[in-house]
Length: 384
Image (cartoon, rainbow, N blue to C red):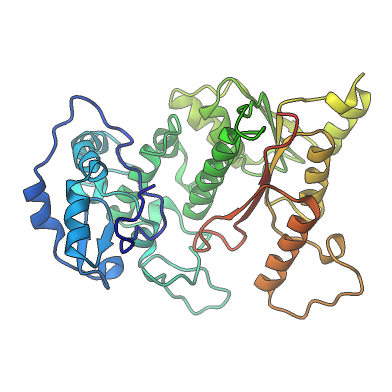
């Protein structure tokens, strides 16, 4: 992530990929040419900034900071990788490619703020409205599909996927039947995976020993994309996707990964619930050490699944990561307490109760414009 230069720059969501595909053969553009095309302020996220760098999707209010940015390594890396990105975009296929797209639209550094501007917002009424860049309220309509996006938005999303570092991801999405590619689910899954990745890199013993995970249990996996991203990125880890029934989208995504050159041979699906793991632990000769070096993953598990999975992980000394969803108050606060608050405040308070009870090392969020249930609670565990 880009660090502030003089404290007045902002990339809106701190998810810019700088130099992620940098190669020795890339040709750097000149700083002078880049200066000419980036100093003009425009609308949307650029409004409010005196100076705007379009390739990096970042604004400045001081000329000194802006010039330092243009002379910096990270800006030069973005410019250098643009030619390789453009060549890759031209070969991306009909799902993403459109002849009307300018090079900057496919190579500009990712900014969620720019991407959501003008997209259909989630609405509980018949009145439709759109998201606005720079306005932190509202969420992407969950029904919005990739094929519903205008060409410039599809190009920006391609750039986000292609530079994510996740093997075959943009190719998998391109191969997937488009009725399965919902923008909200895709962004939510990738952002969740990034939190999983950070958790796995986190030290487990005060910086002396790196976390080592050999098994991931994706409980209540649903469409299963988060577990698949883990399987694709960590082929040495066995990923166990567990849910009551397999969804059609699960199989479709798996087939799309395979057709894109990622076999996911380390991924399995089991029909059932948390009792699968509970029975294995109880039948193990040394149940307390069953599944050592494991990660319990629970993304939007229903009702009691969130705290049940956390408690199992803690008993086994596993790492765990949870995105709570439909929490039940009686599982987390006294039955004497009556919560007469908004739904979002109620959810936040119940997540706070989870944090107070289980004392995780990590509490963070996914941007609320992607999901209204984006609180991430995690712990690297004690047995990893």
